[in-house]
Length: 129
Image 1 (cartoon, rainbow, N blue to C red):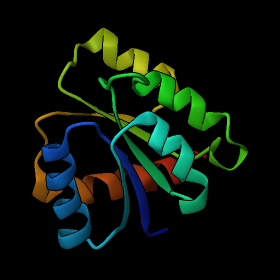
Image 2: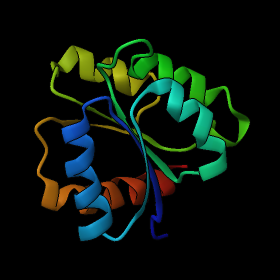
Image 3: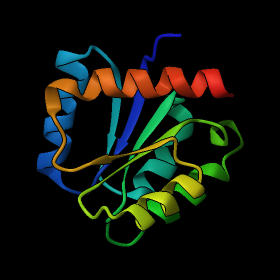
Image 4: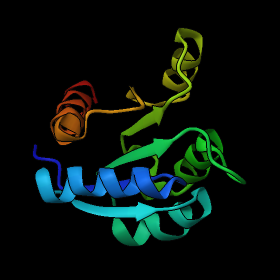
């Protein structure tokens, strides 16, 4: 199944801009870019994402709090989530996976490969569900 709609939640404007170029211009996805967890929770249902790319370190609502709030929305309860973070140690990575993420991508990420990587992770998630 081809991935079409991605919601990206990231408070850093420059990272959002790079991800938008990588995911929209290069990979051809439809993207909803949110600058905060609260914005993502408010807009997610209307967008109906097929995959959520979620920053870990954000002010007010961090990635884990955002994930919990998104999971509380019935139509988003099973949408695959990929965390993206610069703060990555194996124990932390396992914590995010245990919380329900299908993968953790390190920052800095390779923009030209991001779309292919997310498509691959999405397909793997479809097989395991």
